[in-house]
Amino acid sequence: MTAPLYAGARAGLPDSVAALRRIVEAAAALDIRAEPAARADADPAAHPGAHPAARARAVTLRGDGWSVGLDAGDRGLDLAAEACDAVVMRGIKEMAVHFLAEIDPPAAEALRWSDGARPGALAADFQAWTWRGARAPVMPGLDRLVFEVEDAARYAGAPMHVRLLVPPVETGDGEGAAWPRQKPNGGLAWPAGPQALATRVYTVRRADVARGEVEIDAVVHGDDLLAGWAARARPGWRLGALGPSGGPPAADAALMAAADLCALPALARAFEAAPGRRGLAVVAAPPEAAAYLAPPPGIALRLLPPDTAPEALADALLDAAEAAMGAADPPRWWIAAETAAVRRARVRLDALGVPRDRRDCVAYWRA
Image 1 (cartoon, rainbow, N blue to C red):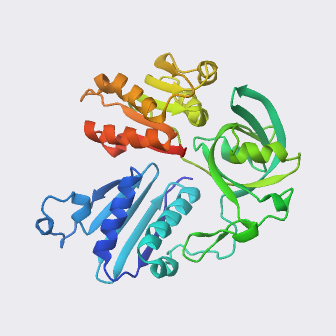
Image 2: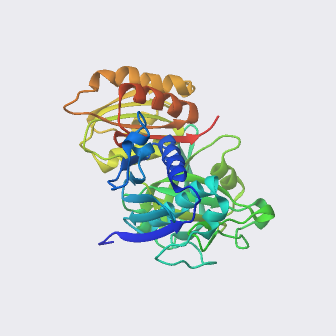
Image 3: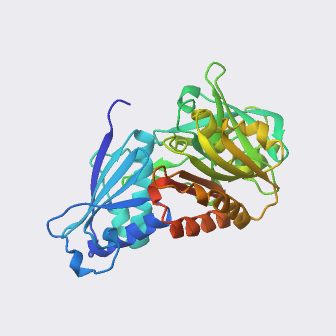
């Protein structure tokens, strides 16, 4: 894509200022940064001591490759979205619908975007993947799964995550599965009841454009979604995929990373994307993880036992890295692990005053 995409919408809300405040709070819980925007009628004195984004009537939420301007007016909450591509724009719209549904469900359903909608159509980034089979496990607990895809080049770039949609057992090979369809408000209508899909986000470990293949390294345990499906799937079975989205952490500073087994594919992709990275990576995984990750020479790798408690994983990184918090060269933080590890990391990073635009704290799973 050579130019960003734009879309605007208005949510008819009786108290748009209160709605804006709730959206900012919800975004903060996800480490999405909010920047107050200038408005002539903003009155900081009306909310002394409040965070500027919480008291403003105009705020911009920002992420990698996207932004959403929010302006609380008398006629409702105006939204102005900018995205680097159609996948990210779909994600913005879904996020907006989700936030608004928590505040005013009718307003969320009534939302309409200026770039139109195709109600009933598949999402622009949807593809059906065909199961080819499993290759030898890359390490204890991590299997490599191979899929045939129509457009492997789509998954060969910097965006590295896909949302896989696993059909219910009753659909067998997936040919009769119901896939999510676009709604007029920019969200997706998901099949329910017997046709409900199980979904989870995975990292594309490798895309082979010549062979038309995508490889996913999936954690194997009793209730794992993808590995469980793969255990019963036969070649030719199909599942759905949305994406890709989400790239590796920016290589503009030293990297301080923590990961467990589930996040190893993403961390490996981050290392491959920037072989000149420097910093520290603390990983709770089997010893084979060192060869799998192949960290750049500038990355110090510390391996912890695979059964390390999530909070201990976060503490191990923070304890080792606090000394690296130099004002002249603040590091970038990347923590991807079980929910408790991410929660602990956020608390400690807040205490250190690390701004949200310098960190990515993502819960990959919940114990």
